[in-house]
Length: 340
Image (tube, rainbow, N blue to C red):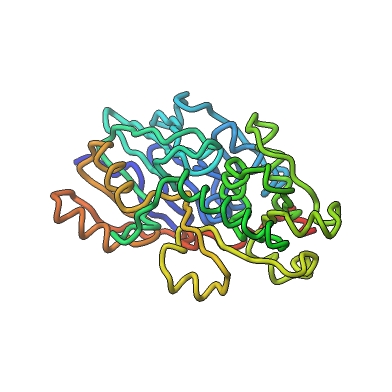
């Protein structure tokens, strides 16, 4: 009987024949990292392996750690397995982990989305025997509108506020969501302000060749400029003195959770825009089908519900417990965030 290539362990998802962990939540000897969000890339491991575009994010967040990199599609033999990374379309440098051992192939997705965002490499389906999928938005209610439509609404909201002489303050996750918003904002409407915790991540994207519009520090604009600006900040910033610099303003939140009216109300913002860096329900099902896998292991999110649905469709599916977060849009802790 073939043994599983990836199993749960105290440190995280473990590959026994390769002797490494994937996105471990406790320190491990070798951590293979799918992307740089804080719940998937944690400090303390002996060495890290990730996509080359993820490396500067890890250095920013984790400090002086040992990092080795791969390009998409490049393979490396580790222990008894052959490992390669493939685009996940989640944030810049995000990757699915493909593991091959004696003719059997497993893929661990990390987080992913199918719609190209203009910032990260587009999702690539990878054929495999066993697929470990996320399920952050693994319920039928989660269905995203096309990015172009959501961004048109965001730009219209900004333009209306600018005409009324009030700033537009958007809360969004600092890595990925912020740069995706910047990429598709209409900079002709007014100046764009970024919180100090986001600027270093913008610079990493620019260094990697992602064209983003010019941004300003809040202190660089006069009253007239602030009254027309689009301000981008991580959620924790709106509880600080930083927000008072804008005076009268309209606020909004960009997250897949804004798909539900109750979440918008709990956030207490004027506007909620359902824009996610995770696959929606149709996207999850499309990605799973594209793998050709017969066995599906479902991690963080709606694991029970998605597994049950997949079993009804004939898959061998079950949840797999992990310690990855579900809260898209929450503040991102960073050892280097300056919060200015």
